Amino acid sequence: MLVEPCEIPEVLIVTPKKFGDHRGFFSETWNKRTFAEATGVADDFVQDNHSLSAETGVIRGLHFQSPPHAQGKLVRVTRGSILDVAVDIRTGSPTFGRHVGVELSVENWRQLWVPPGFAHGFCTLEPDTEVQYKVTGFYAPDNDHGLAFDDPALKIAWPVKPADAVLSDKDRKHPRLADLPAYFEY
Image (cartoon, rainbow, N blue to C red; front, side, top):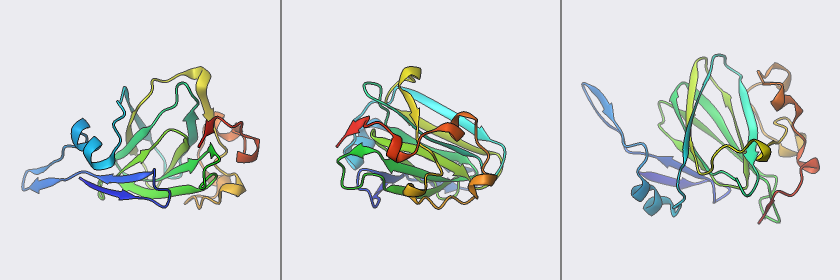
């Protein structure tokens, strides 16, 4: 497993080994012991999520859960490709309001570790993209929050114009960073 820190060091790119031959390939996409040794993250995953986005330009996010139900996420793509984004929303953090954007695809086999304290979202780069991710906390509707994907203060270079993004009604109504309560402290 290859682990690469991002510009925000708590966010990690994790690339599992992949072994191929004439039949196809085999990959151990997650192993608790190997992941903990390679990343230093020993959190337990409690739920797996799987989404399909039919169109290019679908943006899901930016989402997070507040304490005491905060979630870390390990995100991967099993079909297609995405621009995966993590925004630091930890008040007092030296990287508060900054983001990391990483392309994840079935071809590059990368995964992104998004720790608690970050808003997370992605944009599909091709149709029929499937994303799977493990989370460290169960879904808690009362702690489910979001951040405006198109907040100019975030300076996210989405691969689609905001007016052309395919979004849920819920994702169109999230507050900007300046209006977000301090859910996380650094």
